[in-house]
Length: 231
Image 1 (cartoon, helix red, strand yellow):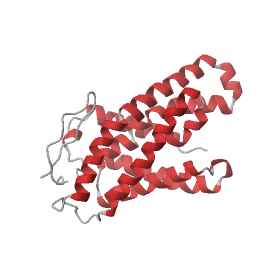
Image 2 (cartoon, rainbow, N blue to C red):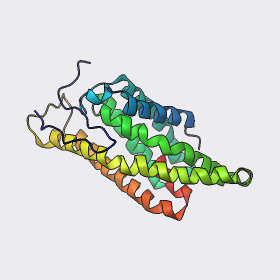
Image 3 (cartoon, rainbow, N blue to C red):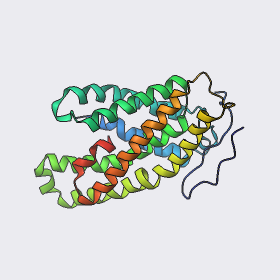
């Protein structure tokens, strides 16, 4: 069996390890439902944190994955064919997340981490949406300057909390589990090829680099630069 997990980081949960359970508009409404639902599951559903992090099934996680699959199936071609959105970071981000959603659903793997990486981290998106609206429509910024500034500050705060301080402890657990699948011959793969966790790790590394880049850009107060990582 895999080694026992280390003590959980402060304010975050460590997944249980075991066997498989028996069991522009980009649709902002979908984003907000996903973030609220993901955060609700992560913070309040105590049963969720007892499932196996790699193979455990959770209906809420599957709902989040199908939601992401639907929105990225729309976003990926739109980003490729609309000139204003045809930026390499946008296209790659959408394509990568679409691929991860498909693979996770195909092999019913890493549902635990999908809740955080596809749900909880969207908490910064509503504030970014307000800032984007104020930027695209100056009359809104002129009419609601205090709201605009509050949302700028809240975006930065929430981004740091869920996409930096929360991202790395959860990423550590994910990499530990993925490496176990790759380098332990007795790891249960359930017909999943070894290249799948390797692909997850590679793309997760790319997305982590993007998070760090956005972290460096936030102090310069240019919200449009943050959109790739928050999409």
